[in-house]
Image 1 (cartoon, rainbow, N blue to C red):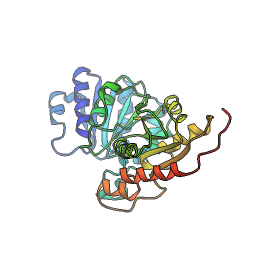
Image 2 (cartoon, one colour; image 1 turned 30 degrees about the vertical axis):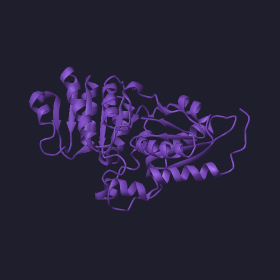
Image 3 (cartoon, rainbow, N blue to C red; image 1 turned 180 degrees about the vertical axis):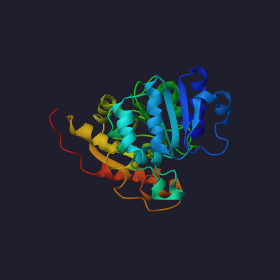
Image 4 (cartoon, rainbow, N blue to C red; image 1 turned 45 degrees about the vertical axis):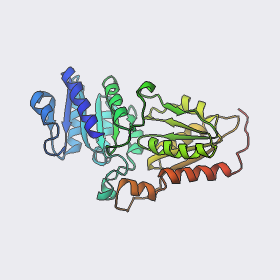
Length: 316
């Protein structure tokens, strides 16, 4: 997914001389073709992320659109003050490309796990947050990013994920995609959790459990209208995220549900990472399994919730 993201920056820059790329720690040989062909649009600044945010904001204030790529924890957690003041308050066209969102860097431990990045960036006014589900959706998101007037955080997954997005569904920033209409159950996903939701839904459908899937590739602004239209049909809503439960997608869903009325309020369950520093080492998939975010464990949670007594009706 990172390769597709950076390839998209290259193509955008070839067409528009006002697009600038800044790298921090790309690795040997990465994007050498960009540097050779467009040296005036290329900067490699090393491991000094806070400086880069200020630099990117300054360039954007001169009319440039700046794409900055480094590891997600460094681009969000380390640079929080700069992101708030230099990007959010200034409302400039800087695109933060955070590699390794979620549990991707599981072998490196908690210092490299971006499990609170959405929470941090969501608190910044003017900041758009996007988490594509696969490389194809990343491509569409990157093409859409050029036109956005303010700052954007793009959460980049590991790469090599199964392609589950569909080009015919299109892509619009701020517009969620209904993969399956809500039935008894509605999964609300972002990022790579869409593939797990699809797998879980397939198992549940075989048991006669009608399952809808709403994919929120854009976490901020959240598409509340489409969500409410789907949630109103369901008995149970389950949010799925490779992120802490504090302030992420599940929190957004809970906030929207709390501020709107239903003829029959669905039961809500948020599935994600609890309020801990993940202290396990291994693979991304092993940590997802540990936190109950594999497809079989998600399906089992859905079965348990649907077996509970439905919530009481409230007046709309």
